Amino acid sequence: MTARLARIARTTRILSSVAAILLIAGCTNYYEIPIETPIKPKLDVSAFQRVLVAGFIAGGTDDVDGNLETTRLLRSQLRTKSDLRVIDSDVLPLMEVANDDKGAPLEARAESPKTDGKTDAGSEGKEGKSESKESKAETRGEPPQPASAEKAPVIKDAKDLEPFEHVFADVEYWKKIGEEYQNPLIVTGTVMFTPHQRSGIVQREEEVYDSFGRRRVVPVRTYMERKGYILQPKFIFIDGRTGTVMHSENFREEVLYNANQSTPALSSYFELMDRLIPSFLSTLSSQKIKGTRVLLE
Amino acid sequence: MPIRTLTTILLLLGMSAAPLAADARSDAKKQVQFGIAVAQRGLWREAIYRWERAVQIDPKYAEALNDLAIAYEHEGDLEKARVAYEKALELEPNNTLIKQNYELFKEINDRTTRKDSQDNQNP
Image (tube, rainbow over all chains, first blue to last red; front, side, top):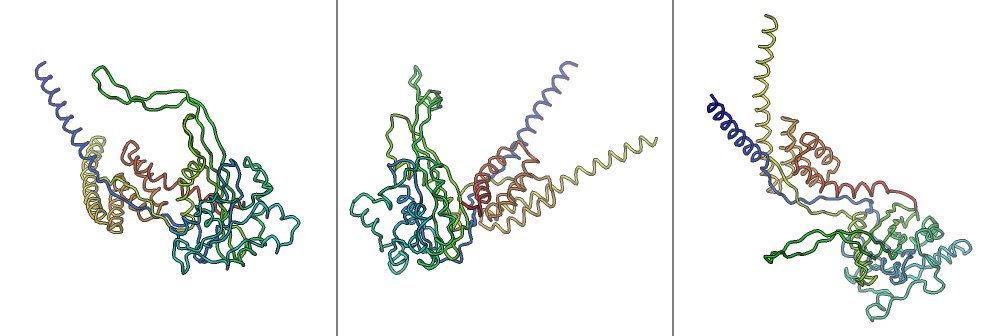
């Protein structure tokens, strides 16, 4: 009787194992497949042929001119990754404009340091041979001159930006700029690039070798002083025909390095901008995000 | 006596329902397999049609819903993809492959919905 029970139990065990294997095999019939997810542009920019990256009100560290660098970077990205023609002009001194906003007549405020309103994607090719003063200076190896070098007010944090932000709502000013450049889409906003420091417990991987010389990677928790930067841009899209804000987006990216690592501010700035450029571009043009998914039977 | 009859009827019903469900799953599976084959050749519209049929035949087929969600994602229909992924996970909450697909999808979806919330805001 006992032997019979044992035999039944063994058969049941075998059968259940086979069933489990079959079940797992049935469930794990999968096929990896590459996909491309199209992301529709946030804004309908079909009414515009041209885009003017006007400039930014920037603050934070003095090591990077957030206004000039952001303007240059966005222009070069838009040249190659959007269908809009990029207007090559000098950067607008928006902080001065914001300061003068209260008293000066509109004509004086909207007098932009323009370069005939030419687009660099015109007859001279996509990569913009019609350089502005600043880019010529750059190629000559001269340091870039800030648009408003003299008497620039100090902007150290986001709160310091507030007194200047009214300039973006100045419909008449932007309409005037729009008229000068044949009604483009205007990209402007604020850029805060600030140094940042944080200390605390960090988990990192460390190589260890046992007595047989075998290598292993183990997680180690250590207290670390780290420093880096925070980049907080706000991109504002203005309709050059009406001077009104169409859309605005806030971003925040940060990077931290070991305290003993010395990373130039400018390279951190580009590292952080790299992360948010796809999101910026997807506002204006459709993007395809490549990825892999698993199809199941 | 009536109890015995009732039990017999219920038993018969139960017995006949099981093969019916199995048939539905088998039919749906054929659609899913065909959908996979055409998706692998880049024919996503046809794949969507097949996987939608599979879900119609067997609405509890989580794998079909997963595949449909991927196809919607590929076509850029993120809202439909989200609904399909969530239904699939409702049916099979412990399926790691569906979860993995959903997490990857969410990364993209969150990015677009985050932008939606900031649309047309004044500075």
